[in-house]
Length: 403
Image (cartoon, rainbow, N blue to C red):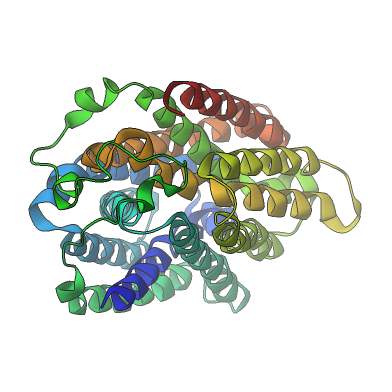
C-alpha cells in the first residue's frame, strides 16, 4: 500500500507540472491572437500566483481538517477545470478569470504534497518526485508545440492538458483510501542534514500539529526568514526563465516562434534529468551540499545564455544548464525543512514557503516583462543572476543559524 501511495503521489506531481510551461511556450502566439502586448503575460502569471499564495497560506488549516489526499484531489480538479476554461477563453480578460481557480488549485497541491513527502520519505524521493514535475513540464511545451505546428492553435494545447488533468483527478479520487496517516520514520526528515529534528522522534503527534501555527508564528522562528527569501529567489529565477525563455530566444537570439515554443523544453529537460540524477546524489551528499551544487550550475547557465554561439547553441545550452542547476535546489530546500525546524512546525512553514515562492512567481516575472518592454529582453541573464546572488547569501545565513 505504501508503494502504491507513492506511485499516486508521483502521478500527482506530474499533474502539477503539466500546465506550468504552457503559458511561456505559447505566449508569443497567444499575444498576437489576443492583441495583447508582450508584457501582458505577466498579468496572467500574477493572477495565478496570487491564487497559489492564498491556498498555500491556508494549507496548514485545510490539510489538518481534510487530509492531504482530499486537498490534492480537489486542487487538481480545480486546475483541470481552469485549463479547459483557458481553451475556450475568447479574450485576455477571460484568461485572467480562469487563472484564479488555476492558481488556487496549484497552490493546494504544492503545499500539501511537498510537506507530506518531506516528512514521510527520504531526500531521494523528494528529488525523484520533483523529477516527475519536470516530466509534466516537458510534456506541456511539446503538446503546445504539436497543437501550434498542426494548425490547431494554442486553445487545443490547453485542451489536451486539461483532459489529462481530468484523468489524473479521477485517479486521485479513486486513490483516497490509500491516504492514511503514516508514522514518520524518525531519521527520514533529518537525514539530509545529518541531524535529528525536534519533532523527528515524536511520532504521529509531530506530523499532525494540534492547531495551525500561523504566519506570525512562522516568522518568529529563528532562520525562517532566510529560508522564505530563498524560496522567493528560487522561484523568481525558475519562473522568469520559464515565462520569458521562449521570448528571449525569439527577440534576443533570432529563433523563430514555432521553434522557440518547442525548444524552451531544454530548460524543463534540464530540470527533469537533473532531478533524476539528484535523487542518486542525495544518497551521498547532504541537502545543503546539493543546494550549493545547484546554485553553481545556475551561475554557469546564466553566463552561457547570452554567448553568441553558432546555431543558437549558447541560449539552448545556457537554458539547459540553468535547468540542471534548478533541479536540486527546490526539493532539497523543502526536504530540509522538517530537519531545520521540526516536523511539528513543517506544514505551517512549508505553506508559508510556498506562499513566498509564489510571491516571487507573481511579482518577478512580470517585473522583468516591464524591463523587457521598456529596456531590452537581453537583460534576462543579468536579472536571473541578481536573484541567484541573494539566494546564495540567504542560504549561507540559514546554515549559520540552523546548521
